[in-house]
Length: 221
Image (cartoon, rainbow, N blue to C red; front, side):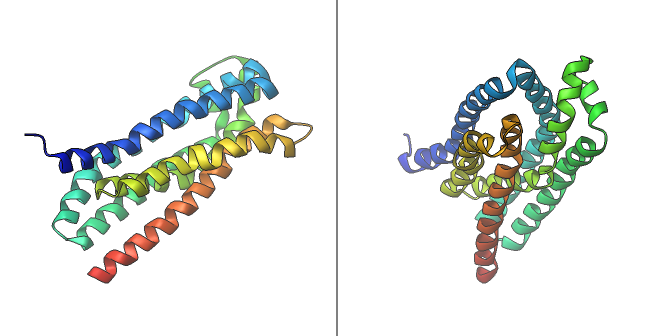
């Protein structure tokens, strides 16, 4: 017999990563169109290189999230809020350190990171500056990823969905469309800068939501 309540909760929890993936595909289409319009095929290639570089470290954070999820979920159900929050804090610290590597490598040795993916001289020259721009916000991305997974782990699918969509839909799409207008005569720089700006804004939203939730848990403790 199918339990409708359990099924509904399971679907609501799975809705967050589903919407995030759908939004990501939609965002990639918009970004590629913007890169094509203002920077041509070379800008699209540059984004592909940068995306692959950052994704290597993002996968590590995804692994940390998967390890955190059962620990946080179990202790939330057992009302061991101190252990739950400790697991979240440790995961957030580790994730920040991992994405901090992207910041350090992207800011200080961008050429060597790009050479891991291409040896094309023109592509290398046009990717160094964008990599530095995108790397500027990477210290915040790890925390934002963990925060979204934290809400999923404790069954608060609505908050997780909000965090999943703020960066890619609420912030990134409008910024990617509007910021090129502010960066004449190099509108392509507006597209590049829309990424770290949206990361920063979404991280602030995540910080506020986590602060309010943690305060609620501490009041219960």
